[in-house]
View 1 (cartoon, rainbow, N blue to C red):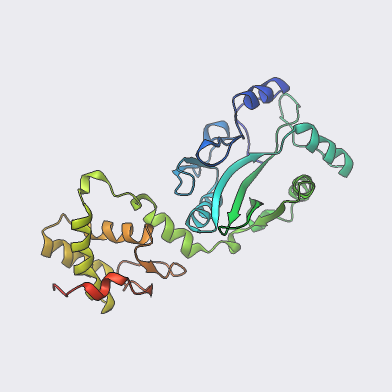
View 2: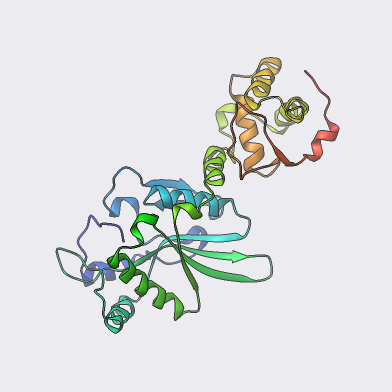
Length: 278
């Protein structure tokens, strides 16, 4: 549970519920906790999600890394962070039953609403299921207090038939997280680049033959910028857009290094239509 900036009372909890926090789905969901609600050590993030088309509030680097992996997955169709375990009376009762202390506000001594880091909706076009995931550094898992709070969450989600689990840093595919972070802002190209589909086809037509010849990505994109008279970095931005939109299928489990060749997992269909302009 993150450290809260604001004091918690029964009244403040009811107020947050009445404001719709922790409710809704997709773009309409509002997380129970936002980055301004908790103490920050400089690692919180606000990121516009692809899956939900809304801003997500991530409270740690580990949450952010997991968010990028989830947002990239085609199986994740909804992604709700800082999901509240309500009603609070239920988690209080679970804590009493287990004989453990329920999280409380250190100033008011009132119970606080517990949250699960991520509630994911997984779908394959036919069946949708929900899974609850909390992220925690591996070195904190042995803490007796952490285990107590985990036990409350586990019982809460078990009563709803929802799979609950813990994700540590060694369970995050770091390469995927880093690659998605690298391309994330380029799903929609910045307006200042002024790249319409005609320009994108020209860039793609120039780049593909070079990349397929294993020329380092930075060299190929620099050549493209020079040949087409583009501002330096424009072709590389287009590459990030091609990957973000799945126009190019590349090996995401390996960290993309612009100084090295780009590895395709499937040759783009447009490659057969291009002519090497180099």
